[in-house]
Length: 290
Image 1 (tube, rainbow, N blue to C red):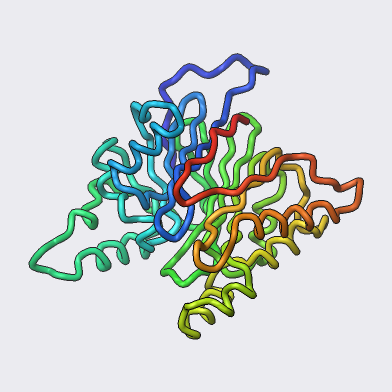
Image 2: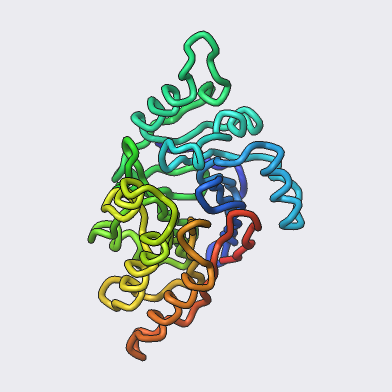
């Protein structure tokens, strides 16, 4: 699968900017904007048009004139509720796995007599984990993650020698996921919950078990262990962003301190020299220029 770019390529040796803006990250809605010289993509669409436009205003910029595609990690509403609307708004295809599409249609069409517009995605391109494809000048590599969804994926992106990885909504970090997170310039990774806060919190026990399971969400502890291990995390990223923090079961300061402590424990020859950031549910973060 490839979508050709109609923009003029930069001269050989000239760096093309790769810009990342996180419009929202959390259980109430997720959306990240990726922009290269030739291509504009959204990763997930858990915001409606009105709120998305407000987020662009908060970033001090106008909405993009065009979006070349919307990539969806999985069907949960905080990642898909605005998908059909945004796809129509920019007249662009949605890229998602076939089981994810099927689940979205079923999920939003609970009443067969009242079909929901949220299920009416007019342009769909099916993708599969492990099968790379291109949209414009961006190479996209979807890879499988473990989460309580039908066929969830995360993504890495490359353009002009720059690599971005976005990995949220997963319960563990198996070897193949860690491999996809190597040699990145920008890493957005879930740090969903603090284990102690989750265990003492208001969720029913079966929900707590689901969140802590391998098909749930990453804890601060798991992410910190990943950051501290030079064999797992190569620390080449210029920017690391902690994402999809639970408002009930985490605290941004706790997540940041946990991650920073782990990064500071790395041996000197494998030191992390980038910057650490925490994404928010309500306030956009960025843009990050690569």
